[in-house]
Image 1 (cartoon, rainbow, N blue to C red):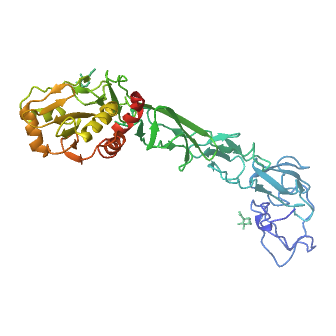
Image 2 (image 1 turned 30 degrees about the vertical axis):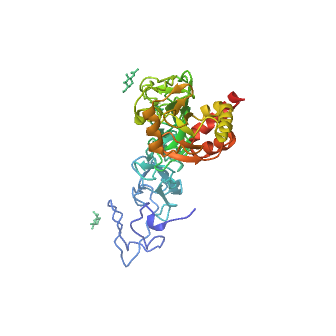
Length: 461
Ligand SMILES: *[C@@H]1O[C@H](CO)[C@@H](O)[C@H](O)[C@H]1NC(C)=O
Ligand SMILES: *[C@@H]1O[C@H](CO)[C@@H](O)[C@H](O)[C@H]1NC(C)=O
């Protein structure tokens, strides 16, 4: 055991040099309370007087107490032979002798002191702190608390015990609180006009956590701003905090394609539709078969309210009026509807004409599919004939045609007009149906007409 002389509390406030020397009557001991001694040149050896109450000096033990028993009785606490048992107050530990006796040499037989009991310094804990009532001294209570978002586990406080050890066990601060995650609201979107998809965007959800500030959010499903096709999508988000507490949220994106009722092709006609045929924004164009003409609007559009714009047109048999007086009125009937092949011959017995007539007769179906009407101009006035199949044209109309298109009566020739009435090709020799078809297919038909022709070709076989 280490001794700390500076801390010795047992007080011997004076030293008796004369102690044990044997000089008779040459010294004085003043039996007053302080035990102070006046030093004299001559030394006095006191008798071993058990009656003398202050043979040893007054015993004091700071933060401690003693129980003394004197051979002379209770009032002779410092007399020769007195024995004192020493003990420290609570919170203090006795270092030194537990019992001392007042000896012949006027000293007590040993020393002792009371040292305050201390516990070791408490370590810091993660995500928390503590505060102590009396630092690390005995009976000090240290209360633990956790930082925001953490919960304390095990002992909430520890006490420095008399023995110098802490009660309980060190607590821990644990993050039990899962983060909070809020998803956007579920939504229904309609496909954009003329499309089967919709682009859907939303605000990325934000996460909060009592303990952590930066959190990584994971997504499962398409990302915001993606193009969604028709259907229901569940988008999930997930977030973990550093303690692996998890939060999830989800919402749905539904994409609907608004559709109009499916249109039926007109009788004696067909349709060509854009996009998916009947989705919002799709348009359908009506066409009539050869020999029929459309009455009504050409194009209908599927509206947002799932109904089609306008009324359906009809395909009605094309009525060609021939009892008209002007070439303009005649041509107007074909404008944007039919192509014209005008065959001119000096006489019905012309070899070229006869040959061409035969070929055209067998090509009638193919010409009809290509929307070509044949007009024949035969002979010279006054016996000149103009006809469309069996319908005869007025003389003025024949003249008008010849003038407008500069068609000679002198020899066999043919003029091919497109749907706008423009002069596209001239022939002065009989032409096979194949040659005619090839020319028409290549230069006059629209893409759609070509497709339609492919579908209907076998009609003519
Ligand atoms: C002790 O007694 C002596 C002699 O009577 C005296 O001089 C001295 O002052 C006393 N001391 C105290 C503390 O009373
Ligand atoms: C749809 O909308 C069009 C134009 O806005 C309207 O003319 C038509 O009546 C509506 N149809 C229905 C069924 O509401």
